[in-house]
Image 1 (cartoon, one colour):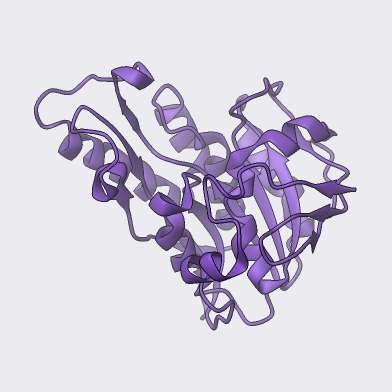
Image 2 (tube, helix red, strand yellow; image 1 turned 90 degrees about the vertical axis):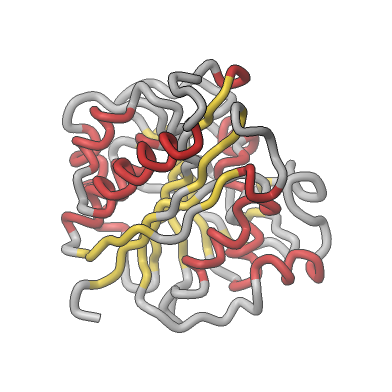
Length: 267
């Protein structure tokens, strides 16, 4: 069963040649195996996502994607996955596999609709990697650590773990405008604090601290941070940007994009 690409040709280009300009050749040589990455249209987030994919190990052959839900209500204490066996990409279909963990329930409709998952498919398609989809939006106390522990048996060599998250959505359009004239700088400082906490593996703490903000993927990011901590990975803040950098919005209405990357401590 194929997951169709509903945002192809709008949020990112339709054809392989145009997408290759964004995602690159598909070759990589590095030691990055987990990340928090943005999921805006690739005109905004493509270079930030590519900064991680260019650092993947050569043997990377599967990605576990965790996204917040933008269209469906996900019950606390659960991760939604799917029974899709393939996913459409601009470079042809790639294999898909159910996320097989105790906390997972199936909802194909939610997975099919979610742009927070789809923005990574051009990168996975270029590399021919297998994908597993997950959506999580709310965490109860201890869930980030518990979900992370449940995912660890799935992280075989060659598997990478990605949390899909834009950071602060600022302005009246998002119902969040607590700052004055220095809004952009205050947002950058706020998001740097969140990214730094995640990079240190303090996922539970980051979720409690920032769950009431407009960081849309703080739940998946907290889980990936805790999994990286349990694996003994070293985290670091990666490149960042805002929608203003590409002419999107104004100083009073914009989105911030941050990346966090984890790699093996001995590499």
